[in-house]
Amino acid sequence: MADYDFLIIGSGIAGASAAANLAGRARVALFERESAHGYHTTGRSAALWSALYGNDPIRALTVASRAFYDAPPPGFTDHALLRPRGCLYFAGPRQLGRLDEIAAGAADLGIATRRLTAAESIALCPVLIPGRVAGGLHELDAMDIDVNALHQGYLRMCRAAGGDVRTDAEIVSLTRDGGVWRAALKGREVVTASVVINAAGAWADVVAGLAGVAPVGLTPLRRTAFLLDEPDGVVARDWPAMIEADEDFYFKPESGRILVSPCDETPSEPCDAWPEDITIAECVERLQAWADIPVRRIVRAWAGLRSFVADRTPVIGFEPAAAGFFWLAGQGGYGVQTAPAAGRTAAALALGEPLPDDVRARGLRPEQISPARFRA
Image 1 (cartoon, helix red, strand yellow):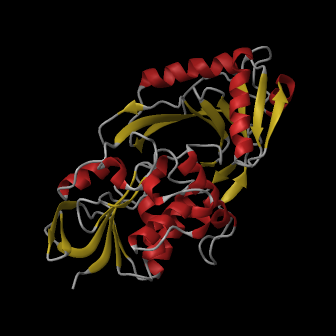
Image 2: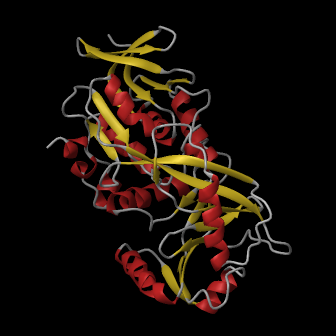
């Protein structure tokens, strides 16, 4: 008999949410090679819930996650997971057609938006430069996410249901023998599991290689962010998240400062990502072309890896070429906002069940997220 029914590799938001949904129904281990849970992408999230983000499968998982965010289980968290924020897509004169496209996509999904004039846009974010901004589109229901509360809630949920949750637990080899996986840890401990769930983020293809499984073509893309002080006399806390219409950069209030990102997607090897000075400098130039925000210093800068496959849709399901190997990867930059529905989806498929009813009702089909789509 195997030590576990499911061994989940990687305790970021994807692995933690799946583990919490499986624990109590199966013997679950959640192993993380770092010394802290969520050290990489989860801990560096921009923490925004927006139903407009991503392609159709991402949007289905995002919308299906909202009920959990609004009403998590008793004891999951001591305070609300979401706080009202809103998103304002702002545009120059030549970009107004882009606002029409975003608005049409929102209407198709039943997402509430409101077109704004330049003056109305500036009223929401007074640092926007008059004459540069020609209009905006306000996504009313976008929210800030308390990422730490969400992540820690899932970890507690898993432990409370009997899950074996570990840090400093790096898997160095995976072999299949007698219908079970043997996972050797750094330090020589060996554990066995009927199913391995690969939730290793940017390292998911690397973990697949340990098991002799072909990669799905995961590409980690570096995303940079940095914090600025608020301008003198300016209080930013009530601004919406501000997204340039072509998504060349965004900025938003963050704990008394201003978080800015160039929306960069620089291919990278799996690593502990760090920002580059030139990327920050170019983003500051873009920001100041649109907004009157003096930049006296960079308070703090960081980078994370958002990992995508070619179609930019998550990979969730059993590997057809390797018994008992399950993919939970390729969430890109949407792993936090989709975690409640993605975790339930992964747990259902891993247990051999159909997709959750609410996820299926929003149009998601198993074949859209299955790794089988790469094995034709």
